[in-house]
Length: 593
Ligand code: SF4
Ligand code: SF4
Image (cartoon, rainbow, N blue to C red; front, side, top):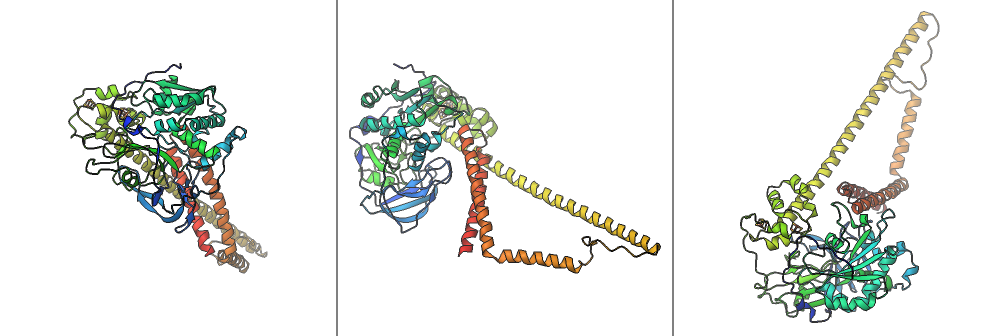
């Protein structure tokens, strides 16, 4: 039996998982409309490559990845593109974001697709490309593009692969039910990951001891495979990346370091299933298992849900009782958020829709003043000081928040859960993080603007200095010529002729100089008027901008991977280059009209 380590803090809220595990994973009727947000992941939003009115097949690419840290989107079912516009997305603020709407035709016709079974004979880079093309991003957390995570670079060899099957948040059973029913395919996905990562020495599936059926389902598939199933005591939160790495390896990741820096890749178990489907079956990520639970739904259970399915569709097919429950939560009760509308779609990271009754999860009581009991600090799995963070967040003391490692907070909600004063601590931390990020972005922008202004000013001053130097040289030449002329006249000889190239300041150009200038102007005007030249010039500009964009994106991906602190600056550079590229492209398009 593998050794495990115990993380600090943590809580034991009621699990409430059994309710949704009484039924097998269900299928829903295909919704009439599917809404696919272009950004369901960390990185640049995908770029639509379809038009309104276009017919699409299930699995067809409808939006391309826009750079290295991005993923493509695929049609989850066949139908017609009926809108490309901003729609409400899964966000606590109810914000709108660009989406593609598909009006489905009910036929669910697949595009031609093919996978490969002998992946052992395929190079890791080709396998990573397949994962990227399938639009796979982490399905258990923030949605980091998996192809980027699986490519940590030669300088960071991976010796440990951790598959996260913890699913520690109450109510959620999406991974548990998937393991029970799809253990064979999940283990196949882990073997593909092992091939991609050059067969790490340690491959572990980390799972809590409250999932005995899932553990039993994995057992026959991991036999003699070199994969160990490591079971550890249930405690919330054990599923955070840093927490799980500590539990399984005893290694503490220093702040600002990535698992890859320690030779570790940590991946959600749902993602391994998606990777198996992508490589062996040739299917992109177009559906996921989502738990629908809470006392306000008729039959809590898990569904294989098409990405883009409106939450309303899930609720309507599950006898949702709006009178019994007031709110619908995306995610679990600890880390989830209340949806402002049931029209938002399921995305690649949606593991749960929770519709609790009023009695089950009552509305929060009003917050009371902090009594300095210290219970929040005891519960924190990252050993932060939540009470201090709360004060600094209230006072908007950003420097102190950063000094107290606000960005190490995993927003698990354990501190809020134990707080006897009902202070919504996590909400303060989320807001403070948002404010700090915004301030950083603004600083990058203003630094950028200041640099541009200073560069422009320096260029003008330099041009002025050069002009002045030329004027001085011309004055000197004129005076010299006059002196020579006077000297020659005094000597009774002929005056030397002026050099052909020198023309005193303010003098009318000689006819030959005027001819040269006129010819140059005519050439410039002809070039300006010649669309072929303009097109060629724009094409050159576009090619060079594309190259610059690629390089900038590579640097950004590297910075994200290394968490070097340059992400904001590089992100601004990528955006800047992308805008210039778009401008050149639209000029070229105008020229073609
Ligand atoms: S648990 Fe609540 S009341 Fe107690 S110290 Fe923390 S913030 Fe204050
Ligand atoms: S939300 Fe943040 S501060 Fe609170 S317990 Fe979790 S990690 Fe600690």
